[in-house]
Image (cartoon, rainbow, N blue to C red; front, top):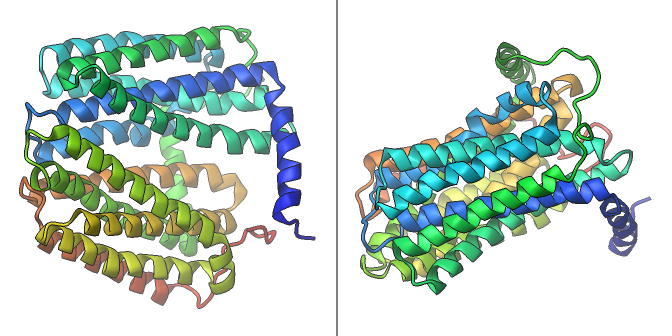
Amino acid sequence: MKADGSVTTMVAMPALREVLAGRDFRRLFGVRLIAQFGDGLLQAALATFVLFSPERQPDAVKVAAAFAILLLPYSVIGPFAGVFLDRWRRRTVLVRANIVKALFTVPVIVLVAAGNDGPGLGLAVLVVLGIGRFVLAGLSASLPHVVSGRDLVTANALTPTSGTIMAAIGGVVGIALRGLVGGGDRGSMIVLGGAAVSYGLAAVVAALIAVDRLGPEGHRPADTFRGVALGLVSGVRELRVHQQAGRAIAVVGVHRLAFGVLTAGGLLLIRTTFHPMSEADAALGQFAVLTAAAAVGALVGAILTPAASRRWGAVAWSVFALLQAGIGGIAAVIVAAHVPSFAALLIGGLSLGFAGQSVKVCSDTLVQRFIPDDHLGRVFALFDMIVNVCLVAGIVLMALVSPTDGEAPILYACTGLLLVAAAAWYQRLSPRRVRATTPEGTP
């Protein structure tokens, strides 16, 4: 029997209260929230210092470098973090990693104080975010030790989403704080100081958990770097065997490539075309609105996709999402660059955000449906790498061919054609109708 929304809420709230009743879960949850809030502050400070500072004119190369620094640690380090998390006490990892993050934020502050936005700054930020990947992986691996049974599903739904929201809040707070203290490099330094304090607080909260509470337990041999690499290769083999899942991941990768092009292009248009260089704060505000528009589009996609994919099929809905982005969304971006028009750019952001979430939800579920459970973790690790690498590749592509003002209509048009071609390819090679359900029939 299918429960209605009120029954679902009645069931969900007691489960949530039961999860939050656990003292060690609350502490682990607190570590995540505080650490990811600090990550949001750090990312806001980097963006404002490098890309939205009146003293510096960003070009496409700087945009690409900034986004690569923010995204690649999650792609490259993530799959290998478990090698150490299965050998070291995870509580120790959480404490020491957050302390190291706080310490390595100090060189970032020193470089910002010196006005240095070169490779040294990028390396320092890369170290902080790379260590942060160990924190996030450690939090996920520790969760079964503080929550068990049916509550684990609730905890898995609550913690990553809450952490992502907290990182976004940290970014907004960082931008607002920088403005309140007068902006400029001094404002970025203060925001970075707040990030360092957040990492220190996360370490303190983690230290409240008993040393052996988070594992690892048992005598299972720890994985190795070679084992992880072989696991990723095994994931590729599974995608070759189960081609429906492979195609689902491929279309997400194409969308992320296009989204990377439009992210860098939108930033350059706002920063250099829509505003004079002296209006860095106004440009920052507009970029925040554009980001929010893409998030609203993603939210609409998340709401509509479950019912739509059940009615028309996962492939058909993904094809529709890609087509509306490749035709309508890209056309809006081309208009935005030609006029120029911020309103048209917002429409493009909404369209691309909607397409991204719609395709990702369908693809996640198709991968879960077609890939055997004993290979699912390896395939999703590979999926995560592909998504982030494609996003960075799109940004780098924009950096290589775009003018400084972001007015690149030919590149935008080619991006739209790529999305349309991907939709046609996906439709032609996929079965006529594939529902977005798991083998058990659960949406």
